[in-house]
Length: 466
Image (tube, rainbow, N blue to C red; front, side, top):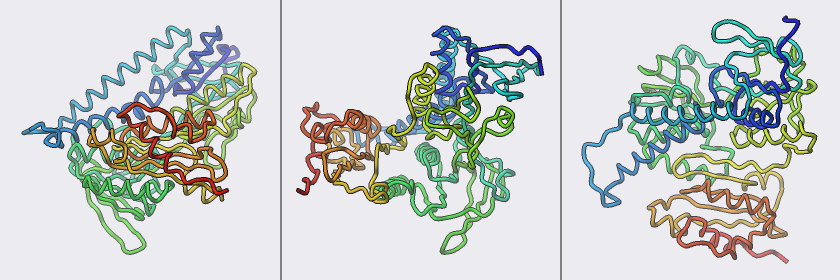
């Protein structure tokens, strides 16, 4: 090891959401900061995950409008999907986002170092550059933000089949004739619907008995009805025993469930069965950084690791796998570095699955409330009761709220419908402000908007039992 490593006030391994904002913020405070990034400038979100996938999802939404055009009084003929053009639109957006990130590094004064980093001593990282040369960097403070990657289950024949993950799926310039999607979570369902709308035959295989099985039964049932209505085939409660063939040509899955064995064939296989933390082979044991039994970096409520002056941020720290949570992790670490007190515990974790319509959630759902023995009052309305949905011809779904049984406090909110993510955000703000549900019920809300649905929803809350 070099006896004189380069010294920095702050070294960040990984340029994802939380890490990059921490770098830019601390550099603007006059700190000498370096961010080490192996491949994706800005992390997964702007390159291969959140934003590119929503770009593709929106293209599929436009396609769905086109195929529904007669409903809106517009005739069409000779329609076809150009997947090359779909991909190019996505690539142009990603390129613009990368340029935006580079501008932020330049304006903030934070250094971006492209290379693969590995700890060789406490708070000391050896960086292998693209040209094969190395630099040794030491930080007074170090933040680990190496993220996660798509999990490939240990199934016979799967690796040889060279399946797609979300990364390769978002780069396709062709339309799979029959896409098999292994996994019924956010990634699998968003991309399954998108490719179905582009024109692929799609089958979703999931080992759980219901889609989004951690959600309430009415949510799972609504999603399953949506997918079946759009012609997506579902194989639920089915495990995969083995895989044959090669994705892009021909694949065969051997399934098993409680009833019988089944074989299903397709042209392409997309694996979306979860995430694995990128914590192996980067020298964490040398750095004194311990892992959990699931391979995530072990952290406390201020995201401090077991090594002094070393923090972990975002997915690799076991935080909920959302970009907005990684951003909040940045605020927690930033405040800790400046001597302020901020923690990760008891924060609201909003979620939104960008199927069409969207599924958004904040706070408790019914399943969680029941399992914890928390009594609640339920209010629920169909989206068709929100008049704005009729003007949009987007009436599918519902919204529901859980209200405390002994007060007017909002415990949770779920929306499955057009604009669900934006609607949920308004309820979240009310919950953050500790507003009673009556504040939303009695508000004067613009007509016709989606938020106007709060009036019939919260007017249907059962009265308190006194």
